[in-house]
Length: 452
Image (cartoon, rainbow, N blue to C red):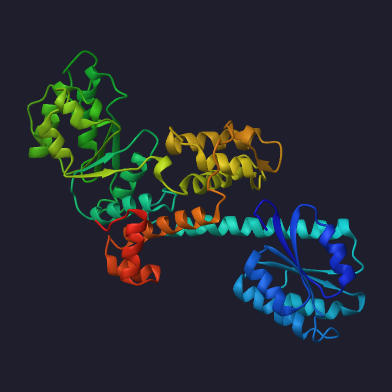
């Protein structure tokens, strides 16, 4: 089976029924077995989501022992497999018994191709939905940070860093392109900190005119300027006891940077038009998509302020560098928008999946969310298509078709992932991969990898 069709295993010892069933499932790659041993071998080889099983198998074609043993063995290997018992008119009791053993459904002979095809299609869809839900659940359970979706090593490294630094008050700088989720990571830092019961106050330094930003940050006294009719605390003061999130800190006006630096050093503020120093206890988290070091070289950002706000810096990877996460996110957004718009779209067709995996997503998570929202609203079928996503079909395959290249690519990625999980510890990496250290060193040389 080459993966271009859905896989179906038929376990039936009657040659006539074997021939009939082989040709009545046009949309499936059908494997045929006539006994338990071959059925298990075929199952291991093809891993079908649906199995049609006759309980009367040799060497006991008149009984159900071999059929039930086959049923039990398959479910022990893959519990989500949908096994449909094909039974005669006089064998309904045993079919019901098989349901008790874990079979999904049963179908009574004689075989009507159209009816049986509907039963198999329904079982296959249930199997796919369960797998997708399990993948989403696993991804969500693997994520320690609320609101962050993904399972790539690149994202997990960021999450681990967030977990480590959250209990402290260290000033943190989040770096990443627009749409990578910097605000979500800032929220996660706050939620995991001892300040979680207090408020997080956010201000976007790029969204407020320069002449208003100072009063927004530091507040103002009555009469400080035209229109200042009452004393008003600023964002920094409002965040007292909690967390202050300065988004797009790279857009902070140069003349205001000195005043922010003084606050970071002394933890006191003066409102605009005021003379009283007000102590403020906040944790500071900053974020930017800009290159602050380049801004320093160009004289647009203070070097001393940069070192104050970047006691620790965290680089959030773009979506194109997060292996496997685009499809995980697409499925999560599909589920969310299905509920929001009362839709029942079951998934993505093959071209859509290929496009999702190969598109570079320059707008990152924000772009994939927008694409999926539109696709769910516009989709007319039960699957999201390439046209629904407004993406083009990739010119290259997601993976090479050559099995040797596929294996080598998977092997290299497995080694890289194991290294990231063990902090580049060679012994632990070899142990995680189930190989010896000499073998691992040979693979390092083969793929041009190293443990540093």
